[in-house]
Length: 391
Image (tube, rainbow, N blue to C red; front, top):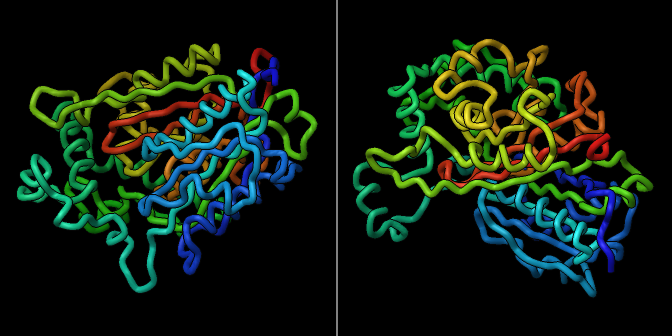
């Protein structure tokens, strides 16, 4: 088998119902998303020779998904996990496999179903007390029992170092909801104001409820193949220009950069260099937004504004409809749906195809896709475009 000489591209996108979708296991949701992505590309399951799987909170689905789909003679099959950075890593792995000839047509899928009827969304991510041991037990005794608390600590460090304010974080929540109002798939479409943000209850100070992402059930899949092949398929190809990862390994201790920098500072330059672009060339950003603060610090680390100036930058209106840097145009994870790194990736595909409807941006030549995992521990970056690389 020879690899693609024209690059790699996303040829199919499959999305199940998202949000409060009950009664379906992550494996069933994943299988549905893969089938939809394959059909979207105008292919059949028999055309797949690669499958990459990312699971959510339950640990399912795994590689057994291939058997559930009836896939045979695969050249590539594995489960990957870098938390919210996994989607970008899967697509990069799929692209490298296509370019090398290790596989020709690879499905990448994420599925999760943490929501339960008559249970709060927050309970989906609670950890059992038995899991707290060693250093984790010490932090738990101090009240750090959830990821919310650690992101609150990260945001507070930035506030103390640079003067970032809660109102500036609120500007991100407001602009993201403005985009969600234009997306029929978004879970939260009711407009909000900065006052609504400020009046929403504390989750972990300085983070309000409207600083925090949704919890969703569902699945999203994409199909990656050679760009030359994708040109002849059912949908406009979304070309993969560049990719990169960054895993800073910050320790949460005095004197570290925890909360102040992310892996975007490494993965961004790698991906942009591969793509042959700079931040000045980026038309649209799809930034992983598990919290408003994640957007702010990622934009700084990508170089869209100097370090420490993220607050004034996001408060200027640059991210919302009509802004100079449209960001999270589907409502992101704050207001759209929470499918880990597949949330920004799916919206990037929609925008690159020109299928955004009321939210379609006027310029979509170069789109940056950002994935974040852990508590700013892992990062992946993709640069995608509706045009072949070098065009």
